[in-house]
Length: 223
Image (cartoon, rainbow, N blue to C red; front, side):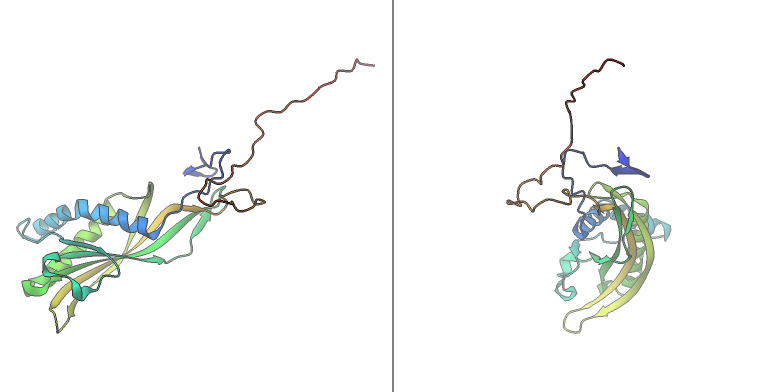
């Protein structure tokens, strides 16, 4: 049963204090990593074929990390590397439906770091990675905590990253807006007039529902 006016959204059982979904940025990052780990090598090979390169000649990703990793600390055996950077909510969440169903828009950047030891072709390989990432995430279904997400491509940039004490990288960064529907319910949770639980680790108290009632009917003869 869906929320009125919004098919696909689950309605809370009437006998539970249903808080509803609590989707995090970590859920989104994990979903993106799963898709790229499974599909990106195939898309890189397709890009090679379309550009007249031998399929499989471009190294597939060896490193998979989330934002926060210091770029200068990448060992050579972890390149090429894919970095997923979900920076946060970038647009005002949209509230719809009978339970105040909230949809959120995350800004996500996917970086590809390529060892520039490949010389002049390293920049081309980083750009090929960008095209493969872009196409893969727009074409493959993205399921975030059992909720389907919509991916919009915002753009991409390419750069040479120089670290005099280490080495030079060729990098590309692809930017997306990712809409995840039903990340939270504004109108969910326990009844409005209730005390906080004494033990927060226990399930919340259920809403009360009248399942059966007894009514005494006294018949009176017509006058």
